[in-house]
Image: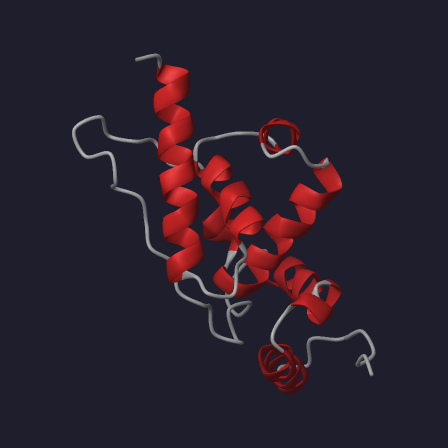
Length: 141
């Protein structure tokens, strides 16, 4: 069996697993994350899932907002342990604290706000406001 077929099979299986365990991600978003874990670029992911790079970017940003930057990291698979990939949990609303990329994460959360659970976005906004993380974007109606 070719490595391309193995990779496709692994990615499909991983995407299904992510979609089941990360209920806030839809199947195409989980598929984009599965390809990210395999080291694919946004252009490569877009080609594989028959989408655009901007759509893949939106999928990544939604996942990052909910699960942190770590969800888009590349992971080397161990041939002896093919399922040694991390499991993700939703980050806390204070994820940005003590992170050099914390402001970038806040920007992603607020940019993706309409695609995220409203209570989560409100909790992030409240935490950022109490930490004087200004300027915050206006609240959406």
